[in-house]
Image 1 (tube, one colour):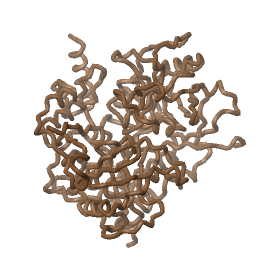
Image 2 (cartoon, chains in turn orange, cyan):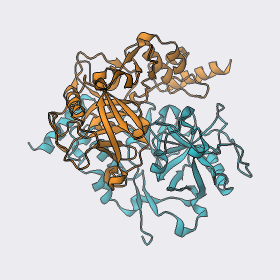
Image 3 (cartoon, helix red, strand yellow):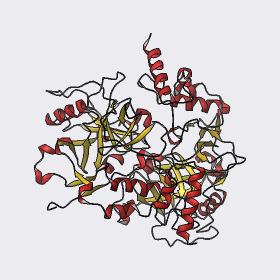
Image 4 (cartoon, helix red, strand yellow):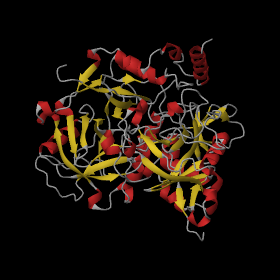
Length: 303
Length: 303
């Protein structure tokens, strides 16, 4: 018996001990994620829609955020209005709380709005009906079902119940006060630690950072309450936030994201549930929604 | 019906929909974590054992790590030998990979050892029998049971099966190469992103950062493969790592940690499973092992 076979058998026994319904998968997973992606087809990938993409320009570089109009259409519309009013330009990252969130907005809370709204109705959940929901096979602590919708990590109660985006690392939400309808997008946060899933269904998620997360996550932690910076000079200035559609084509990023409704994505999930890397001795046999990679690649302009 | 009562009822209905065994708890949780801690007794808290505490001194400040001899006795003994040989003094943080780990050790891999060993036998799991295991009530994606042992997040197959520490944010482990027994503590890492639970039972966890995590987690991400720094000047120097027992008493930190085998800790867990803060509209009714806070407080020297 060679070492790889032995590892597979040990994994299968462990999975059986965990009474896992997909034990056979351990023996079937024969590729690493890298191998799966290398064999992907062009049609497995999608471009970012410029109408649903924000570019946040910092001195350190660009953060790219994909918006989720399928879950938060009113917030996304308001965010488009905010950035077209240059609302965020000259504002700052005001908060970095370790193992929780990085937040940005108006530290003085007095920048005027024109067409955009300061508060709009909450979009914590939506009907699951009609969503193309790629279901993950493994149990989740917080929701009956988790999976992916159009590239975003999500959960739902049932096929005909409600659905919502999940607070995974890199997800972007609209801060609010105590009232449910007190947010609107003027204060945004990104999850920068272990997934705070208790926030699910309590606050409106509007999108996800797809490039440049390290420019936000490595910001020095604020020493004030809840990680707010205590001194103005500690804040990280935002040069501007623009909608990609409003940026000249030659200044746009050429990114493609792996579609989450493809066989290739299912193979990525399986490759990560049961790692084939030589390093792993006991494949987990499972994966939680926030540990599934959502591959992004840069394409050359001529492609 | 007042708003609080309404929220409680909505929460109870949601929990029932999730077929949760502890639905009644939502109605019972009447205190926030802050209120629970404010009412704690002195006996709910424990000091750090100086023989199981490391002080990692950086230019930015001190990182305090509690070691876990109950799970990794051989690694902890080797770490004591390493720090007593001043092995880490003058070495550096060499890697910061976004949403994964920060790692430190000898970038040149040539610092000599005296009594300490470079590699020792793996300590991925241990028998669950004999462990005082505080069980969490909620399902976990990766393990049949999760909970806490002597202040550390942990999992077990069953009361008589195997047990292991879980890769939550702030957990510290001993890096290794492909062979299971190729680690020993000369390379250490700390989890700095969403819990990479696929590492559980694949690598030896040796402890947990209890103070100063932000000094590690906010390090600039390395641009090399796997987040390694590509240039020597990007590394963060380690002044020294010492065992608290070897530090003069007046230079030690006066920390106390909440015992995880107390009624107060159970109340903390319940307060976080069902948030009473006015901000929350739908209490999760559940919590995963890596979202449970492990309170630490500074005591005044005369206490």
